[in-house]
Amino acid sequence: MGAIYDKVLDMDHDLEDLEMQVVRYKPEGLDVLCRKSKFTRKELQIMYRGFKQECPTGIVNEETFKEIYAQFFPQGDSSAYAHYVFNTFDHDRNGSLSFEEFVMGLSVLSRGTLQERLQWAFNLYDINGDGFITKDEMTDIVSAIYEMMGRFSEPMVDENTTKEHVERVFHKMDINRDGVITFDEFMETCRRDENITKGMAIFDTVL
Image 1 (cartoon, rainbow, N blue to C red):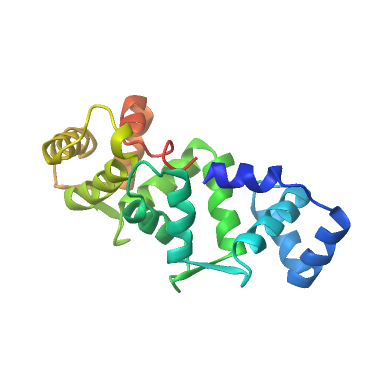
Image 2 (spheres, one colour):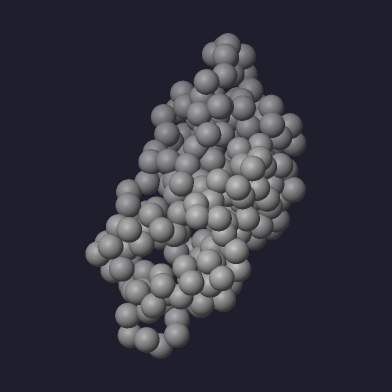
């Protein structure tokens, strides 16, 4: 998603035209987003123009989100992973992303603190939102990442590779051995062992 953000910021823009577009959107919303996100007003204006060019209706549905993701991961199938990322952005669970939801998601991923980004990652892996990560949930996310990375995965991935990877990471994170990973266990393990964070490929596939 960072690539999308860079693409948006790199676009030529006419600031006067930009102001017109933002005013038609919701200028009071822009000020609120400035306070809530880690972007400047000017960055938000540029991002909004790019957002409107990609999504003229002003909202992104899941299919469009998957199409955008596919452009950046052409070597594999990113649809499953894009589905999970979409769900973390779609806070009100209405099946579409507003500009606000899009910006807040990008803000965490591109400029969030480690704590904020790990919170996002936990939410990604906690697919059903019950506050715990199960082994099945971790398997689903890791499989989706491997599918997306396609031929660039090293080493080449098969079903056993996914299973072994999940077993190893899950064993490290499930500190009290109760079969689920809590947020505290997740945070403690990631802080203690940065290789775990890298191994989960949490941010490489988004930023």
